[in-house]
Amino acid sequence: MDLHTETLSSSSPVRREDDAKLTPKASLLGATRAELAETLRALGVPEREIKMRVAQLWHWLYFQGARDFGAMLNIGKSLRGALAEHEHLTRPEVVTEQVSQDGTRKWLLRLAPANATDKGAEVECVYIPESDRGTLCISSQVGCTLTCSFCHTGTQKLVRNLTSREIVAQIVVARERLGDFPGLTPPTDGLLPQGEGRPITNIVFMGMGEPLYNFDNVRDAIGVLADGDGLSVSKRRITVSTAGVVPQIEKLGAEAGPMLAISLHAVRDALRDTLVPLNKKYPIKDLLAACRDYPGASNARRITFEYVMLKGVNDSPAEARELVRLLKGIPAKINLIPFNPWPGTQYECSDWDKIEAFSDIVFNAGYASPVRTPRGRDILAACGQLKSETEKLRARARLAVEAE
Ligand code: SAH
Image 1 (spheres, rainbow, N blue to C red):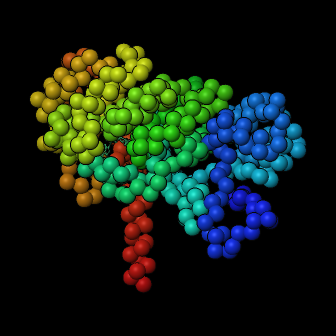
Image 2 (cartoon, protein in one colour):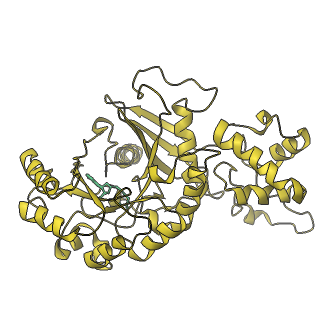
Image 3 (spheres, rainbow, N blue to C red):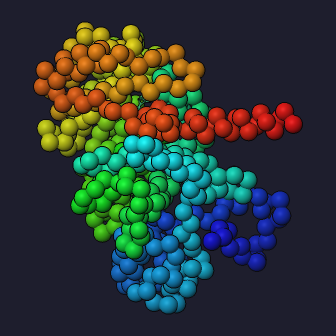
């Protein structure tokens, strides 16, 4: 479907040179209930009908996964027509889909252009099937500004924040590709989790970007994702991971209420300053204080501390003991992540016996300390590898063109 541009009133003609600045109308896909209501009002739907119409649209968009307004048969013909004329449900384009030997799937999505000169930013989104769950890892920004020294995404400059609709659209596209809407057929490659339930049970904001630097859009997207009449992923199954934007942590709990994950990676400020430069602004002490106060954290709803295992950098038994000491009093679980190498990195992954020794210390102190099995490494879908291959291919294509 073509993107609609804003209708221009004939009494205020716009000069041609301004045309390039016109912003294409955003897809209605991913809209909140309040935004849907606003759209319906603008189309002249009477106030007394708004709530019912929003509920109908909601069901079609997020429960049925409808791709066009024509399919929404319980909505009157004239309203369907008006919606089709003035709105659209364009999805981000799936540029590539890769399936790893372990069933991990990675999609490169091209977002609709934000204005007439924008070519459409790209984000990656990864689906990780496990025996008891299926996790979708989504992005909150195009690129990232944090420059964590071990993360490849951090070497790419931020292009922009995603809108809440673009965040939601990632799940809609993933569900479509997994055949996970009524009426769709799931892929037949045998790599989806077997048994009851839907393929996507959990969502983690662990793709590209720092979600708490895009707070309002992440909060609104969580509202849409968690709504029980639509996409229906409960807040207990949505995790927001942050490098530690301290002032936004309490707000996240109060206004959105998802599970919280902290990319800790070091137990001393001097080291964390070099791994996660944001630490210079919000040191460990302040970060952990914010975790202690996180609304809704309890033994049943623990905060996850992510700790990437870097050989000879942060993987000693003394650091494991210090980690246990630091987390005292916080309902926590610790996720040890074997470092995923990328071309040009100065770091190596810790040896397996080191990881095991670290994990044992943490476990013996009473914490769950699963070691995250690297998934999808063959398609560069593992933590910190996102976007790298795409960028590399682009760079190669550029060089080829320049060489001509
Ligand atoms: N900015 C947020 C969201 C990104 S989450 C945050 O920092 O939490 C991505 C997770 O993968 C983070 O815990 C990050 O520290 C980790 N990660 C990044 N690069 C990695 C790599 N090369 N190997 C393993 N984990 C990595």
